[in-house]
Image 1 (tube, rainbow, N blue to C red):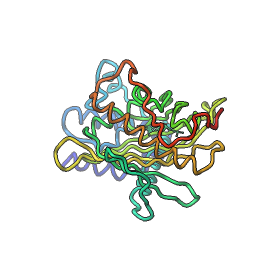
Image 2: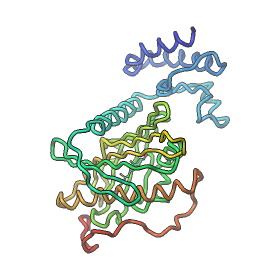
Image 3: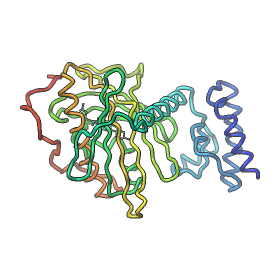
Image 4: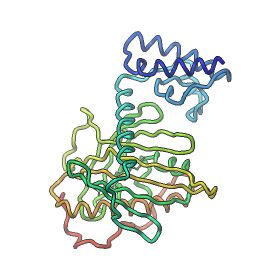
Length: 314
Ligand SMILES: CC(C)CCC[C@@H](C)[C@H]1CC[C@H]2[C@@H]3CC=C4C[C@@H](O)CC[C@]4(C)[C@H]3CC[C@]12C
């Protein structure tokens, strides 16, 4: 009974909690600490979103060491700014899911031998978005594990030069700076992105969402064309056949900026999606452990491309 009451209270107060400031937040943090204590003693289970409030319970996957034990003794509520990023990430995911779930107007763009199918659709405002659907030979957990370790992504994906996590807002949201490699499709020159990335899990399905964001401390960088990714999402669902494989849906919704003609961009984007997924497959086959070197040759597809001198950032 008590756990049910606690959950109910959490649910009712959630919208108010997110808009609170100052002393009110401190008071909530103190209550959170009490609840976390109860949860540690096995007396109750808090809903997953309470992690946004920064109430470390000591039972989460982040519990490793001394430092996390210190957090339990001293819960640090999330800052206003962090709550803002969480909300942005959540909104991006919701918007992207709406695009994916609207079944009207999609047409098949390309079909690969390995089973990847890319559909496209033109949204209002003339933006063409791409939806890749495929099956990956890995569990949702492994795919999520690999995709969430964004700072390691350049080790297995030659279309990415570098990704840095600039801010972490709770365990499910981060602000990242991403730089694509000059080789990406060879058509679209190097780009950089500033994005908020957010994940959520519902039963056995994993959702990754993202959208372009701004940081005063991180304006567009000299020499880069700042592109905008999102609202975008990746949906990972286990196949029902018990083989440990997953259905993978990826909405690519990108404004690459720069001066390239739309027809060229709209050819390069689905290729970039296929290339990325090919690298992901290879990375998944290696299992969960971190890689130390990048010894595979570049795998960016050269098919259907004009001479490689065409690039819009040079
Ligand atoms: C065509 C040119 C401009 C871009 C090519 C590179 C594209 C495919 C790269 C650049 C940045 C990349 C994203 C960077 C970060 C993440 C978050 C991660 O959790 C899922 C993958 C995802 C969403 C990547 C998908 C691929 C991505 C969009």
